[in-house]
Amino acid sequence: MTMRETFVSAMDDALEVDPRLVVVLAEISAAQIATARTRHPNRVINVGIREQLLVSVAGGLALTGLRPVVHTFASFLVERPFEQVKLDLGHQGVGAVLVSSGASYDMAYAGRTHQSPADVALIDNLPGWTVHVPGHPDEARRLILESLPGDGKVYVRLSEQSNAEPHLGVGFQVQRLGRRGVVLAVGPTLDGVLNATEGADVTVLYASTIRPFDGAGLRAAIHATGVADVVLVEPYNRGTSAHAVAEALAETPHRLLSLGVRRDVEVRTYGDMADHDLAHGLDETSLAASINAFLP
Image (cartoon, rainbow, N blue to C red; front, side, top):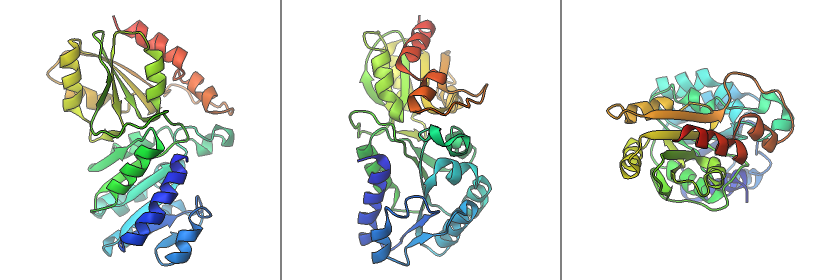
């Protein structure tokens, strides 16, 4: 089951038990969630291809006390209606759970309109958001269900890319201990990082939740490693969490290498995810070369 299928399954179950929940769609996944819409016609709303309206409707529903869960591709959920996310949710002081699909370039064959490497960086400009980047469908289900209670602002970034195994802990989870430095892998980058650092004497941390940033976990890993050299590997814009690393290590002299989707050029390749991983230096061979060149 993919992360997107897991989302549909989770909402199908959650709508049965929580009368506050309302799923708001903009055509994407409407067919998959049609059964739930039949059972709950007033709590599964498809606004059509109107992404700004999608978020504005969610803001209005939240003002009435309902808990909106808003879903479409990342480029149409965060980038296109960013003003509505900023104003109709944030400025009005209401929350929602935004669940995206497509990630940075899952649908590379669809071209630039369906790519969203800037989504987490955009959300990061707004205060009070929790950001989950699951690396496995089992993690996605847990994080989605845990986001439904309350009234907080939550962004869950789903992808077709997945690690082989789920890691269901909280905070920055230690996957491997070493002495040359710390590599923090976010979401579906973990397996590539583990393979790229196989045999290397490095500590590998894993994050499925990147906001709030687990500064204490990073400091603990550096203390155990004894070296304040950090490699940050994120499946979206390179350096998105660089400021969070700097803040966490404000009192610790450190070096940082940020790896992720390139910011210096617009990669116009179609192809598939593997082609884009290679173009952005996120394939295992490129990761190994970058990490080994940076860490002493």
